[in-house]
Amino acid sequence: MARISLRNVSVELAIYNPRGRALKNELLRRTIGGGVRDDRDRAVITVNALKNVSFEARDGDRIGLIGNNGAGKTTLLRVLSKVYPPTGGVVEIQGRVSSLIDLAMGMDMEATGYENIVMRGVMLGLDHKQARSITEDVETFSQLGQYLSLPIRTYSSGMLLRLAFAVSTAVQPEIAIFDEIIGVGDAGFAARAKKRIHQLIQNSNIMFLASHDNGSIQSFCNRVLWLRGGEIVMDGPPPEVLGAYDDAIAAADEIADDETSGELPITGERAFS
Image (cartoon, rainbow, N blue to C red):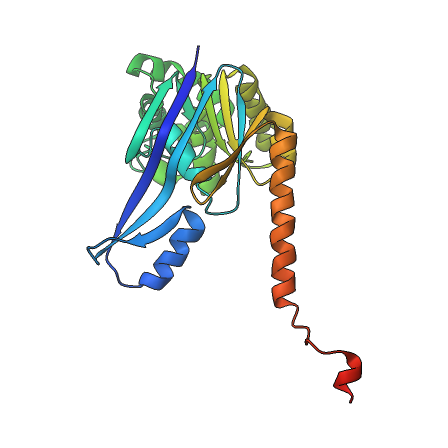
């Protein structure tokens, strides 16, 4: 049995060094989510990435996260992945979590592929014996062969992603977390990776997927959380939430078009009078 409970969870990220403040504010607003404020200490900028987020997830939930860039989706996934501790509120998670949002987290560039299998496995919650037991599966799936005996600093970016993906998906989690449905490597490997992701989703107790693709949300999810400015705007079935979200986008686009149309507030007759 898996269960997740968030009660009034907030994440505030303190950014130090005020140089380049205007550019930094804009970048943070666009990439992290929430709002940016100055603390009394002018050397600190605080990003309100999540604000009083509350919800529960239980066995059978397949939850999609939607919202514009900077809405707080990735921050929420990192809280669920235990990467970001909340600065306020309570997070309760029951069940093994596997996250595909930071594939290479915990990997040592100077260590061999085999050594990184064990290190990454331990970071995913396995003990050393269990982590060593997934080696054969990673060997078969990654198809890296003798390269696994070499330091991963010698790998190409594609080889590194193959290894990281193979390790991250070698253990069936109770709670699976995705930031988009990723494609890894060449066409052959990408097809096997997609199949493996679908198996993880099907066999997990709870799944979270952040995506800008409504088709993926509709295919994989039975519930959707719409985030805006670090807060949950709506929580419900995909058709209802996606419909409301699309309507909001259309309304915002219409307002933007009206404001930038550049039409002169005069008639043709007056223009030539």
